[in-house]
Amino acid sequence: MGAPIALTDDNFAGEVLDSETPVLVDFWAAWCGPCRMVAPIVEELAGEYEGRAKVCKLDVDAAQKTAGEYGIRSIPTLLMFKAGKVADQVIGAVPKTQIVEKLDAVLAA
Image (cartoon, rainbow, N blue to C red; front, top):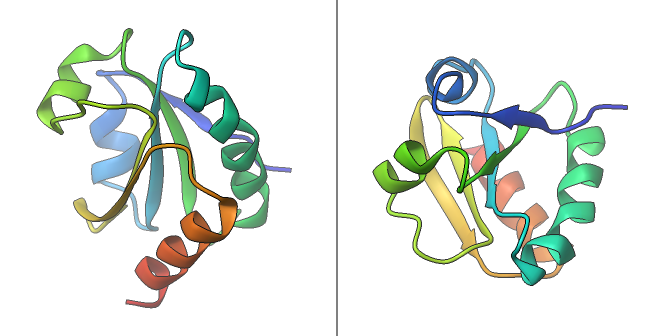
């Protein structure tokens, strides 16, 4: 089963911007309560979307440069990338259905 890919400032471009498939990036931090609520959903999506979309996690404390470039002000923030551009986003701890709906729309576009 697929697991989320851990992103850093160094591998972000290669894993996300240069990706052939759409990418879901979970911007999170260890101290963030709502991030811990979203984490199991992100883990499930990594398995469910294996082969169709890449699922990644970026610790905003460890990768401040990338988080800053995308204007991440509140976490968790989930950004969906397609062809190297942000295609959609979800901010805050939301139900899995809401994330799946947006991710499916990005995949279908």
